[in-house]
Image (cartoon, rainbow, N blue to C red; front, side, top):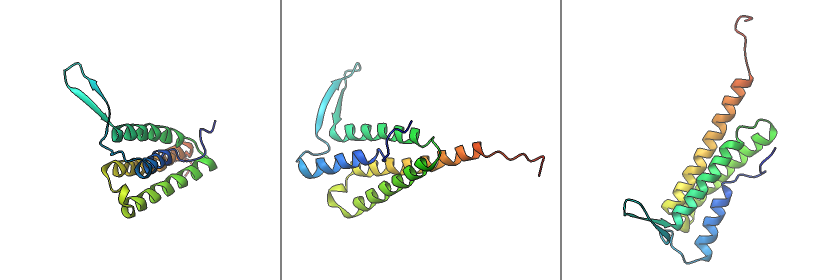
Length: 134
């Protein structure tokens, strides 16, 4: 079963771009607060929600990287392209120069590295060499 044909981490980047340019909200805007058992108050910000969503997307991206074949190779190339575009955006776009976007960029980098690492490990497992014949 093929989950999706595009890199999922493009979704948090698009959400970031839309919210940055369309709404006047700051990334440290409090969305909700939750009273903890300890008596402390956990303030959940817009940035926290976007980063949590990005981590969920990262999980599914790593899950997708366990496949092998042409689709997996194309998916890895597209994930690399998303990372490169996000890096260029981080360096050149003033609204992307935030810690929130930097962490999304780091999540994209982890996706690229994990995708290739998992693919290499799967290829090593599939490729078995019997040393007694050599």
